[in-house]
Image (cartoon, rainbow, N blue to C red):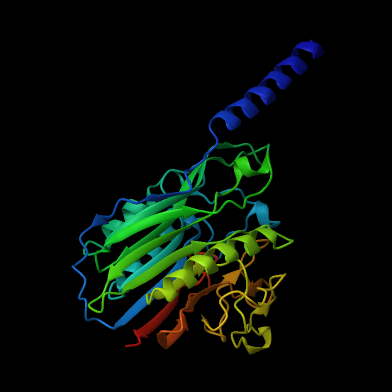
Length: 346
């Protein structure tokens, strides 16, 4: 009997691995994205724009939540709580629909962890006058961890919503990733680019990113920064205006924990971004408020560790008129939204 049980266990384990290997998400390096929605035509003479970036934590990581990847106990939030988080996210986004561009990270379209709610469709519905595009960065048919309560199916990615219809939207995947077999159950990191042609013949280039986490050595983030820096510098040398924003999973250059005034416990992400990347460009962040909280425990102000990892980097021909982290006390996500207003230099 023990031999039969052991054989069934081994066959199940091998079958699961074969299934994961044969269904592994292996995207092409770059491709054009479909643009949906009803954004207005670009005003080629417009020079001032507003932007917002927010990692919404797939509507499962609000203030009451912790997560096992970060040392917590929970695998997924209950369905009622997930709907409450998503409802609050939808309301905030709807209330801020005067923003020109929204960069959203960790938005699920069909995942067990978010009760298979298509969050991209839900958010698109509250922004009826926006164009949008979605780029998949997490597509795993089955995540077997934790063994007692598997995370299961995950299909998620980045979304950019814009009041102005882009001329082109593309996705490019990084070649940096974790080694096999871990890579089968983690994100395939990428960045989404949208282009808008202006009256001076140059482009406004917007790049939405969500860079690597769980990278203690910083090697993956460094390789991602190398690619982003190379792409962005090439665009700038062509005379284009470049804005990169999102969840960097790293602190911005110039970050000082002592500057935070919210009363939160603040920590740094190591290793820091090395010199040489984006030299002469602006790291734009609100130095007074954290943008991310750790998920080892539910959020408790002054106890839960926080930091700043959500910010923008802009090319030297972009003037920053305002930057502000919108303090929501991590109510519906483990990240806070960050708003920015910019002006393109002539």
